[in-house]
Amino acid sequence: MTSLPQTTEKKLGLVIDLDTCVGCQACVVSCKEWNTSNYGAPLSDVDAYGAEPHGTFLNRVHSFEAQPEAGCSQTVHFPKSCLHCEDAPCVTVCPTGASYKREEDGIVLVNEDDCMGCGLCAWSCPYGARELDEIFGVMKKCTLCVDRIYNENIPEEDRVPSCVRTCPSGARHFGDLGDPESDVSKLVAAREGFDLMPELGTKPVNKYLPPRLKDQPSQSALTPQHSDAKGLFAWLDKALEKL
Amino acid sequence: MHPAPSVIAFTTLSGLGFGLLAFLGLGLPPVTGWVAFVFFALAYALAVGGLLASVAHLANPKNAIKAFSQWRSSWLSREGIAAVAALLVMAVFAIALIFFDVRLRLLGLLGAALCLTTVFTTSMIYTQLKTVPRWNMWTTPPVFLLHCLGGGALLAGQPRLAAVLLALLGAMMIWAWSEGDSKGRAGSTMETATGLGRIGKVRLLEPPHSGENYLLKEMAYQVGRKHALKLRILTISLGIVLPVALMLLVPVTHFTAIVAILAHLIGVFAGRWLFFAEAEHVQALYYGR
Image (cartoon, rainbow over all chains, first blue to last red):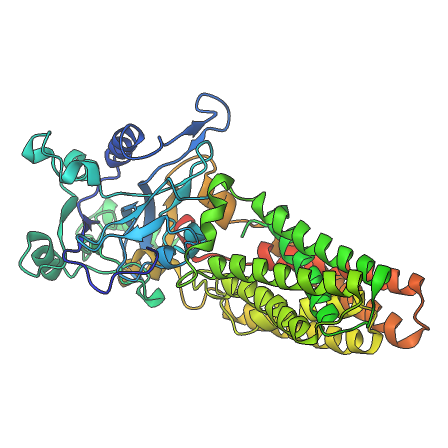
């Protein structure tokens, strides 16, 4: 069970557009809402109304600032969840067989009936995509809403991960990244989608689309560029210049 | 990484226990009867006590029995199997030696090999993690094995052998520290973690949550790095230099042996605490740590 499949029929995953994400956290909330009441143990909160609230989330949105060598810095909102890696180290380290990657669609899941809560899979993940639930003692991670995407009891437009369905800015896309003709694969090709920490060799399925570069205004609006003042103002301009 | 007391107790105590068991399996010291009983009782108390401490860090121990199932891929599973095999083989050897005064030499050799295999598998749990560059080094298995052999020799009353092995351990630890210091996070940066290096230098503007969480508690522990140098000096002076000096320079009595063992144990605890506390995990880069 904890050996990785040689290949998977599909490579289902997410494409996250860092250019479009506005950091509203709606995906975080919808993920928590769906996944606390469906697949596996709930996502518990501890001290929720106290001084130090904390809890389990499968998706979190960081905000970074990237500073180019010249010009203004760029703020980038950065949603992060399990990347459903092809070479998922979290699967092979698992001693109980709880952690596995599905042959049919490549989704990485935890069978909570087998998990002993040792936390080694979370240690092996470079992305911080797995969180051990403090109350239920089992490892929680993104399931790619496996209980939505194949669910024939819900309307067809809802058969995508909850975060994708919720995103108000259209920054999240879901599909088969193993099929070069799929919409998501075309999007990744067109926008030069990239992997997170490629140097660790995990081969993530999820891709990120880079933010478009900011315009570089040639001159700042606040600096006076030239003076065509005459008379008193010309003298004042000169005098102030000398100060 | 969070230095969980249960895991520190587990790796140090069981390492010492398996070290002593390995020497007993090799016939060092050549004890029989009640003296052998005392030695084996100590070795089993350390090894089994350590293993029980490790169960204390599981969040869902009722599934621990399933950890024997995935030996094909998982070092943690291999460790569990090797530990049980070593304890069972050495139990047969010990019973024969204590109660029947029979030394089953081949079984003792097999048991010793299994003890070292157990410690090697423990070390590989850490060595395999590319996400923690300070552990993902060739030095980690020799450090764990020399801990086990050096401490084991000390407990088995082999002064010269203990001195040599502990000196090797000290050298290996210093090597591992310096290599770990220069390795840093092995080329992973906030720029590679976010892919935003194409724009420029990256810093965290806002974390995703205002409080703590599992990831920060477990993998972004920062207290240890501040005291790294002091703890390294403590580890080398108490864990290595003092016991080696006692073994080589003064006549070995029960008293000096006990002082040497206790000093070594304190040094080893400090060193193992540091092994966790100063190890940095790449996922902390997403939190700018």
